[in-house]
Image (cartoon, rainbow, N blue to C red; front, side, top):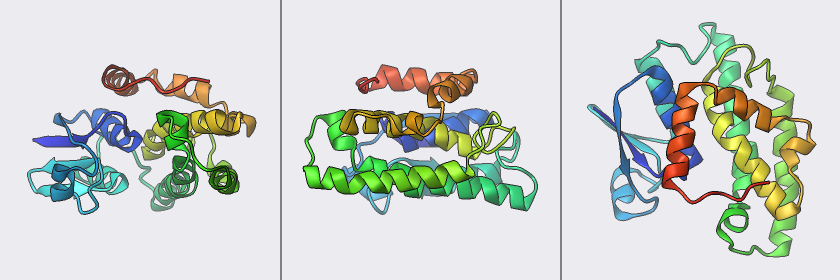
Length: 214
């Protein structure tokens, strides 16, 4: 049996959960606090999510997603063509490493009422703007983020884009994602036509405090 460990508040936890649901795999969920003793014992950096499998424990959400795709290739969440698959991975990496992680520096203030120094907030802004511009150069929304088909990139974009938008709206008074011309709300509604995304959204709302809305 596969066990997904972490917290529904985590967008990376929900990314992996969406992959598991899309694959139709049986799995259990176990609440594990990031940085706590169990997380440190099971995950090298004490991060969540991590996945317990019959073969052992696996951490880092994209590594987990890639393992699931390789071990359970149907239904496919990556194109069969190696170049097209690499482009999906490229888009996901840019989204996570250059946009979400930049915006994540704002989450303490945006979602947890912990004020950040003005100089710090000012320094983060160009990082988020640069990451968003890079993401826009690759994203297609035709209608999915990497093109016509639902892929691993959508599993990431669905959980990350709303947080970037809400964080920038809260901290800077402007939804950077919408201001860049990305209809992220429409994209989220489209993804939530899928039963897997409906399950992720419902479980997140049932198990976490609501984030601030725009």
